[in-house]
Length: 41
Image (cartoon, rainbow, N blue to C red; front, side, top):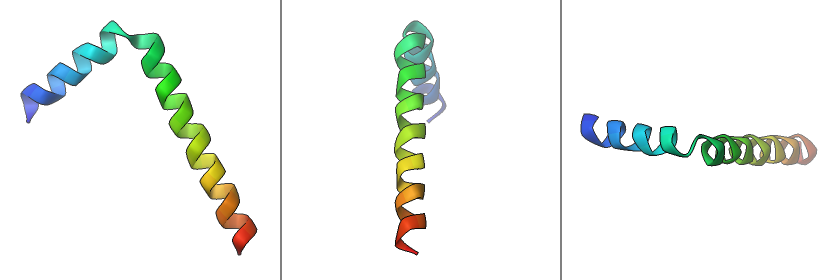
């Protein structure tokens, strides 16, 4: 398990820009879901 985490961490470190974009996408999707939940209630 720890080896897997290290491997993923190394991949993210090698591609920091894409990792930042990916986290930004996750943030946008979560915000979209939150707004939809607020509209539904």
